[in-house]
Amino acid sequence: MKKIYLDHAATTPIKKAVVDAMLPYLTENFGNPSSVYQMAQVNKKAVDEAREQVAAAIGAKAQEIFFTSGGTEADNWAIKGIVEARKSKGNHIITSKVEHHAVLHTCEYLEKNGYEVTYLDVDEYGSIRIDDLKKAIKDTTILITIMYANNEIGTIMPIKEIGEVAKAHNIPFHTDAVQAIGQVKIDVNDENIDALSITAHKFNGPKGVGALYIRRGVKVSQFMHGGAQERGRRGGTENVASIVGMGVAIELAYKDFDNKIRQYTQLRDMLINGILETIPYSRLNGHLTNRLPNNVNIGFEFVEGESLLLLLDMQGICASSGSACTSGSLDPSHVLLAIGLPHEKAHGSVRFTLGAGISDADINTVLETLPAIVKRMRDMSPLYEEFLAKQ
Ligand SMILES: *Cc1c(COP(=O)(O)O)cnc(C)c1O
Image 1: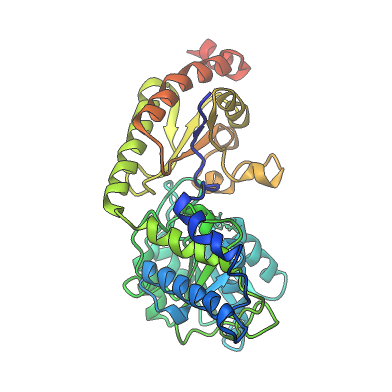
Image 2: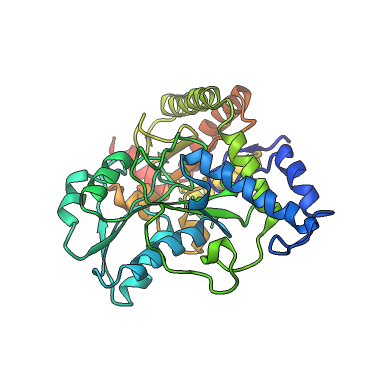
């Protein structure tokens, strides 16, 4: 059976061109970029080129890009590093209730260590309100960290407005752009972003490599103590092959970009409309248009999301029920609770995320498969039976 992979928000397949670019750095070009001989300078050049490629994708300068082991490290570094560097100015952080755990758990850790954190509420679509942000700012606010786009429901935050507020108050603004990169055009200057996290495996690059952009002049303390790599900010011998892979992957993610986005958006809307039209008691989580072009998140009433995923898997369709399952807990997603869904509706939600290679035919297969599965599950549901009896 052909697999239909609709979980690109979790990770993506690495592109062949990316693997090809990486291979020499796993074989003959094995030198340490810090070494002086020519053989190693090839590796230094390769890392420098990747830094240029990442910088170009977000309108930054190469010196403002620091390689990390992924999105989680970039988020940890940005948040802990900025507040530590600014602790003489205050101890207050503003974030939102719908952040990825890499941000939320970092903020919770800091709360236990003397920092004060405001977790902004979101509206029914998952977006913060600019007025709430303005009201939350205090004299002691030293960081605003709000994600660019949500990993579960795809909602895009009002980044430019947040950047303007942050700039007007002279507060550094960090954004977790892990889901947005390659899906949205980003310009750190136009949007007044001071720090930004990305990870390569979400845009068809290798796992275990990411980057943190830090605007020149924004102070951030060192996260990884060691050698002088990454201009003394992040010690450790560079993951050369993966860094090269990330550089190529980010360039490819923005190649023929408008066409790609048009195609994703069309497939996304085909899936959303198809489901809402054919499956009763289903609703879209997140905003209809202000969402990532590759994200579909649907709540199915009287259905348990995890079981639906297993039945879809038996038909070769890979989807996700959000991030809660990864923690091994049965708590419903904090994002779905934050947009106001009651527990049972949050539990019945499934995320489908598109990516390279997904076709009309794949979406049609999902649309042909899904109604019968949902019906089968509902036919076994006591809640559904009770609901029907009341009709
Ligand atoms: C995947 C993801 C991360 C974590 O990235 P890793 O590279 O897996 O550490 C952080 N934030 C968001 C929004 C993500 O989707």
